[in-house]
Image (cartoon, rainbow, N blue to C red; front, side, top):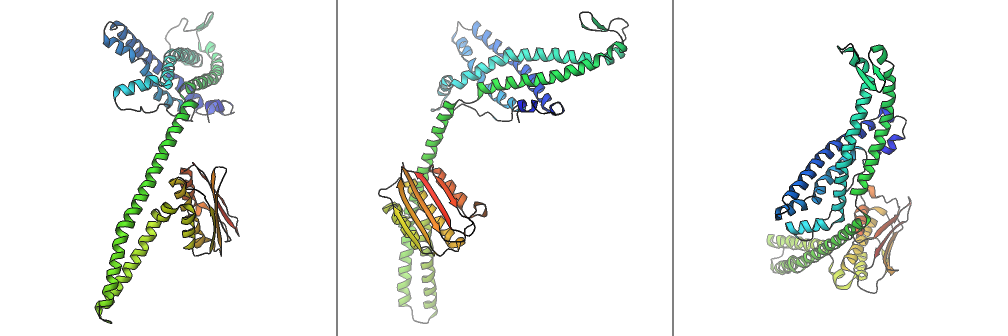
Amino acid sequence: MTIWQALRRPRFLLSSWPWRGLAYLASGGVLGMVIAIVLFTIAITGAVLSLFVIGLAVLALLPLCGLVVGPIERWRLRLVDPVPVSSPHRPPSRPGAWAWFTHRYREPSTWREFACTLLLAVLGLADLIGLSIVLTSVGLLIGSPVIIAFSDRSEEVINLGPGWQVNSIGEALPVVPIGVLLAVVFAYLIAAWAGGRANLTRFLLAPRESELGERVVALTRSRARLVDAFQAERRRIERDLHDGAQQRLVALSVELGLARLDAPPGSDVARRVASAHEQAKLALAELRELIRGVHPQVLTDRGLAPAVTEVAGRAVVPVEVHVDVPRRLAPEIEAAAYFVVTEALTNVDRHSKATSATVRGGIHNGLLNVEILDDGVGGADPALGSGLVGLADRIAVVDGALTVVSPIGGPTLLRVEIPVR
């Protein structure tokens, strides 16, 4: 809730919002006074030293003062507006102090922050003067009986304005309700003024749509590079396992098989060699499953349709495959679609109690569509740990969308749409 929303509530005066608005304006006034002194000092120093190069360097620091004030103002905004304002600045493309300075000078957000700094120096002082007058006036009106009671003066004690003097407690008591009424009015006015100041600050400091668009493009490119690097690393690991550890296990299994034939039948050596042979074959089978989970060779060599056909052939439930992808797609797209099918068929085997499943896939209107349908009991829920959240995250990496329709009693339909690049 912002201070503008709080102003419309009946219990506004009983809430913390009037004090938060007062704190926002008062802290802005103090900060504005400090900023005015700093800016004046920098400007005078630069002007005096302008005959030398160092003077120009000092003057060049003036616009960069907003880089210090901007984060402070974003933090102060939280007093009256809980919605955070993100920094519009982007890191420079090259390292070094000169690259940093030139990059900051070219950024429009740097100059908007400098404008916010100048406004704070002017309006902050105005806030401080206005708050001083308001608080002094209300304090005199409400506290006039106390002031007179503790005063030793017998003559005129309080001058509230032209022709309005209060000299006794009897004259001061009727003034107190006026002070209370003014305190209520000023509470609303101060909150409204604080809200207006906050809106102006947010307008100057919040990132523009063009800047947000540039950041989205940069993040998208960065994510694409990470996905490419991740897929390349998976393929490297798959090749190392396939050409290294798997080949050694195959050779070991062959050697143990030959040793098993040469060992005396029924001897302890024959039994131990036979046991080692079986363990080697189990390790080889597990390694092959691991390689398929990292990145199947058939996906790299032949593409999505043959890879889906292979994984469907290993499923416990009979799976009918209709995948028609006439051309090779980007490796990250093929990998995302393949692992979605793999995880979906694993869920079918483990949870669905289905008797059959169907996998369909094809390219339509620039989208790769993959559907997995089973005749199981339905009720698939991501919250139950069925892996659907992980699938959605994997598809989101390639800008795809995942849809699950799984009513109680079935059937369950999992549909994936991925833009084809």
